[in-house]
Length: 132
Image 1 (cartoon, helix red, strand yellow):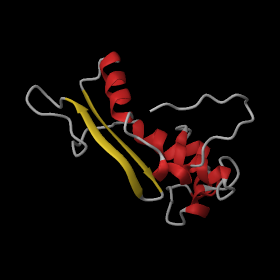
Image 2 (cartoon, one colour; image 1 turned 30 degrees about the horizontal axis):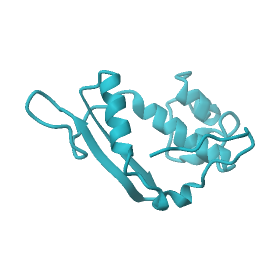
Image 3 (tube, rainbow, N blue to C red; image 1 turned 180 degrees about the vertical axis):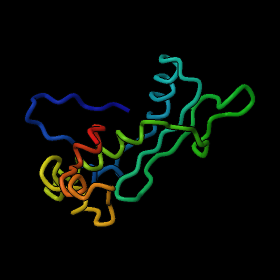
Image 4 (spheres, rainbow, N blue to C red; image 1 turned 60 degrees about the vertical axis):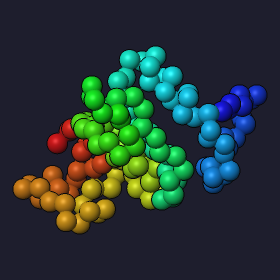
């Protein structure tokens, strides 16, 4: 799979809507080569868009005896915060949320701390940067 290099900074990225038309046949080889190059024993990758699964594959070994498959469950630790920030960033870009102005309890009315003043002032940026 080759991704065309953009000739100018103004060139728009391909629309994710066209993802189902992409030829992903070379993706497995690229991902496995990157896994080996970076010393990763096993991993899985999934590509989804609007609830549709476009690609899922496992690479390498889970342990000495088992392969790492697309169904292998692995602990991801603190990476979930990056996923949350990315998802919220998309909502901020769409104008549906903001980082620093609206208190969290306006988005999640059930969110409540012991201190009502803090609850009324706490923003997404505060929570995601551990300023609480």
